Amino acid sequence: MMHIVVCAKQVPNPEAAFSMFRIDEQAKRMVPAPGLQLVMSPFDEQALEAALRIRERHADTKITLMTLGPESARGAIRHGLAMGADEGVLLRDSAFEDADSYATARALAAAIRKLGCDLVLTGRQAADRDTGVVGAGVGELLGLPVIAFAKDVQVEGAAVRVERVLDDGTEIVEAAMPALVTVSNELGAPRAPSLRETMRAARKPIAVWKAGDLGLAEVDIAPRRIIERLFVPVKDGRCEFIAGSPQAQAVALAQRLREAKLI
Amino acid sequence: MNAPVVTLVVAELVQGRPSRLTGEVLGLARRLVAERGDTVAAALFANPAEGAAEELIACGADHVYSMEHAALGSYHGEAWVSAAAQLCEKAAPALVLAGHTAVGADLAPRLAFRRGAAVATGCVEIAWRAGRPTFTRPCFGGNARETLSFTTACAVATVRAGCYDAFARDGTRHGAVTRVVAELREETLRVKVVERRPDAIEDIRLEDAHTVVAGGRGLNGPEGFRSLQELAGVLGGAVGASRVPCDLGWCPHSWQIGLTGRTVQPELYIAVGISGAGHHMAGCGGAKTIVAVNSDPEAAIFRDARFGVVGDYQQFVPAFIDEVRKLRQSQ
Image 1: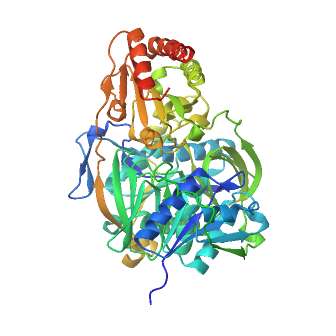
Image 2: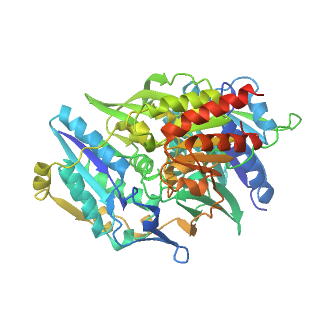
């Protein structure tokens, strides 16, 4: 049996209007407005989608969805189970509350080591802080080959074959499993949970592990990152609106841009 | 005596020359060294063309390490990370800087974990404050900024395009060039590159374009890009897009501008049907002048724009193309 672990993060809905995100500069925290939904980070949904596509071609495959977060993160796991993942693992501990990328990668790596697996999939970055560090870090900590920014992931025999996105094209790479692959938005839209899978999801197991279950002491996951400031950049809001009919707008804009020597 | 503070720049080459962003990162490194530090070192990985090391010196490096190995020919994550880790062992930099490209964004976190260093990706500002390097980067979809520092002795960071001026090229600068043979064992190179599929060469690269015309969800379909291409043609510019039209297949993925796409810094950026979400603006915020065309007067893009046109782009864009043509002919 092939075992795929998908690492996912629960984030405030990145599609929500920015007015839903209030930045508390004093506390250096983002304070969600009431009603701001928590969702699975979209790139991680696409990582799970990649795993589900692999399982469609290789039936004897188990998919474990893993996340580190507070109790609310159980919602992201339920969503993943309803998309089709087989089991969930929630890494939840008060010691993880202040976890930075390094601590998160340490905890996920320890949990993956405990489970054992053939392939780790995760999103290229989380849609809240857009750091893009944890996936690569888990791969490095586990000593796995790391393949970043996948738009297509195929398993062929004991190897994974990935088309990955570069700045000026793509490349096809292969590595023997176990390996870690981060998935980019070019993979395509993730499936929505079906009613049948949603019903089944209620009976799927979710394990909850604490730092101690992973053999992690406080010093192992002490944050190295200090948030000095969190702020909303000031915008000068000097937009000049050009009024009139489309024809008049076209004339006026062309004139303004000519005056500014831009055209 | 304190050990010298070394700032190491990971160089990327385009046709054997330092890329524009590498030039900007060297410009940043020189500013940082002026605040605190001793040496700007640069790492070359690509078995470079003759003269590449000297060019890096002219662009601000004091010391170029040319990492040599057959596997370093073009970017290979495992090879570059291993070679960079060996160089960090030797040069002991306090800061390692790379451009925020597909190369830098892959290399930086892996190098950091390999070296027990911290990492900050996609930075827009790096400065020494109270004896520590601090890193400012967009977060929450590009809508907010965070400034970070770290408790580690070394930090690795990637820098977004267009945030810093390149160091003014000076062909008379002197510097050292050290050739280092990277030790890369075959069994550590587990990822095999089977095939590279380069995009079709663009007439004008988005990154180099004076004018960029970009379309978003508001185009309501692939047809809209035809009129944007016509407009870009008249203006001598290039066409880009926000993420939604790329994901919907209205245009190639290589046109995507934003946090996970390309970063452009044209003189003129014309955004058509783009709402202006932070993750898009992170890729075009460096444009000198932004013109926004949108049917929604409340669209966030107008907060970033210098000129705003509220209306139906299908009526406005053809009229605007005609006007630009007229201006051109009257020259």
